[in-house]
Image (cartoon, rainbow, N blue to C red):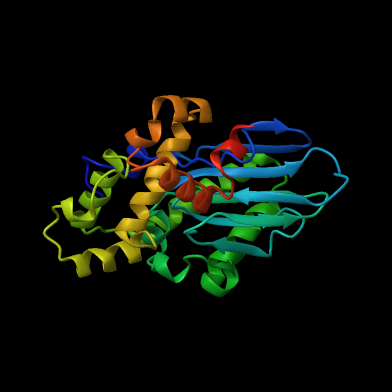
Length: 270
């Protein structure tokens, strides 16, 4: 990757449905991978019940431009992969669960495994059907270790080995385009990108590396930057922050927010 740019410098994907820590009886935690992996992996995460719930739990995942591998600790040999989602998703979970996941930064999964991210977009698949050998190696990390810290070490070793095998190489023109989108927080017309690539070439490279078009990725980045700022609906209304975020009016902002989050801004702010 270009020494002047890495994804994590400019992009910190947010999943705000459950705050870091404990909310009611469900705990969510993110931890960083080995520093050498941070150009590919945003975090390892855990989602688990503190005690058995009285009802099923609905977990909302907002659009963040990322690919995730995940599994339930009771069955680590059955792991799954979910690609970039172009809209929010809701997963119905049981009354008791312990999920662990790996969240790849945009471009991270395709760079490590040489698989087009577009093959996974808006899909939830058995990892065994996509990467059978790696699926078994990943399960072995958790079958052999019960301690979370030791499991993290095992994940780091597994992905560092994969990084060496993959020897990622990059078309810096597409990464220059990604850098510009991130630096401008998704607030630019795709026609403004000056990459030396034709629109068709740019779309093809974005679909391989990111999993969607430059236009949709820019919308997700703009939405994510808004979440990162954590504005209240009162400040959005009073200060017209949706204009600053590149939305041309409040109705446009609300429609796009609901598409990526699944709730209106007023519902989130309650």
